[in-house]
Image (cartoon, rainbow, N blue to C red; front, side, top):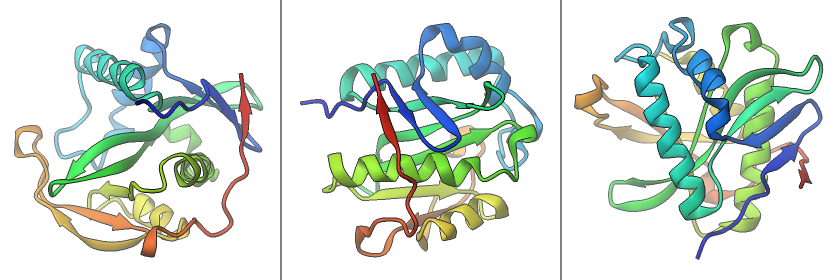
Length: 190
């Protein structure tokens, strides 16, 4: 049975909207930006690969009732990134993987922790039995800082996906699955 997340959530500064096929141009813009992929060992995807990623994200929403969002800054009303939660298997254990990618122009404004806190708030209420993880490259110091800010701690490494050019990646978990400190209050929008 799917656990349903509303199509939109609103935080203090962000609108988090379920990705749609109509968002392809924005997905390509964010996902294919070379600077936004500087810590991706495989580099940015091609537009066709970003389209295939979007298809996977849409399928995840259809099967599970939640997934990645298009992240829009309410003021000035521009898309600043992508992110959310997806089911993932880590070392044979089901988890929720917290993912995000933001346009470089949006960096340093606190959007990643704000979006992530809303995702964690929902996960804590809707799927408390599934631990949330953050998987990132060891060189991605900004993602490591966000993980720590949200109360996550490094718990090991994965081997990465050699087919994608990924080497070992850091795995972060919240101790005891506890809620993130100073979580962001979100409002469901229908």
